[in-house]
Length: 326
Image (cartoon, rainbow, N blue to C red):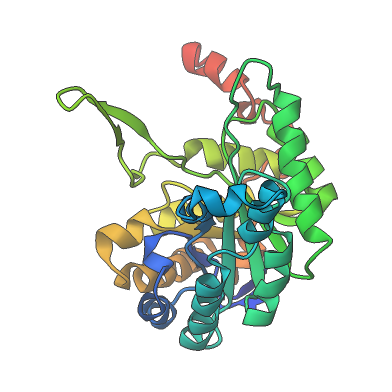
C-alpha cells in the first residue's frame, strides 16, 4: 500500500487528511472520534472576535463609563475574555487526540486583539495555529491594499509573539493570490489554506429577515481552489492546503497532484460521519498504488503548473480552448 504519511507545518502527520475548523471540532469527544477515525491532524473550532465583543457588551455601561480609560479597559479584556474556556478546549483536545496534532484556530479582523492569547496556545499544547482572517470592507474608501496590509499585519504580529507554526486561511476574493501569498509567507506564514468557505448570506422574504445560506460545501466547489494551488505550487514560499468541496479520495488526490501538502475536510464528514476519514484514507492509498506511486509525497505536484510550465490551460486561455477546441 502506498505511504500516506507526510508533514504539515513541519509536523509529522500520518496522512494528509486534516479535519477543518467547525462545530465538529468544538468538543473533546469529537476530537477523540476524529483521531480514532484516522485524521492526520485536527483544527479546533475557531474562537471568534465577535464572541468576545458580545460578552464584553454584557458589562454594564456605567462600569466602563466610570473608568476614564474605558476603551483601554475593553481592549485589555478583549485579549483574555473567553480565553480560559478555549485554552481548556485545547488541553482537552490534546489529551483526547493522542498522537494526532491539534491545531488551534483564531478568527480575527483586527491586528491587536490576539497577541497575548496566541502565546498561551502553545503552553496549552497546540502544535500550530490557524489564523482565519476575513476582514469585510466597510466603505468605498477601504482599498484592496488596505485589506491586504491588514491581513499581513495580523500574521506578522502574531508570528513574532509565538513559536507556533502559522497557517492562514484565505478567502477567494483577493485580486492577486500570487501577491498576497508571497507577502504572507514573508510575514511568517508557514502555510496558506485555499480557500475559506465564507458565510453564505441570504434573505427570508416572508420574515423580512437575514438568514444563512447553505452552510455545507458541495462536491463541485473545489475547482477554484484546485486551480490556484496548481499555479502557486513551486512559486509560493510556503505550504499550500486544499479546502472547500473535498468529499472523495479522488478529489483529495487531485489537490495533492496540484501541489497541496494537506487537504481539509468538513462537509464530507458532516454528510457521511467520521467513518468517511478512514474510507478516503484507504481509497487514496489504493489509488496511488494503481497510479504507480509509492507515496503521497512522490505524487505531490505531479500535475502542477511547475510540472507543466508550457501548458496554457492553467491560465485564462482555457476559456478560449473551450470555445474553440482546435
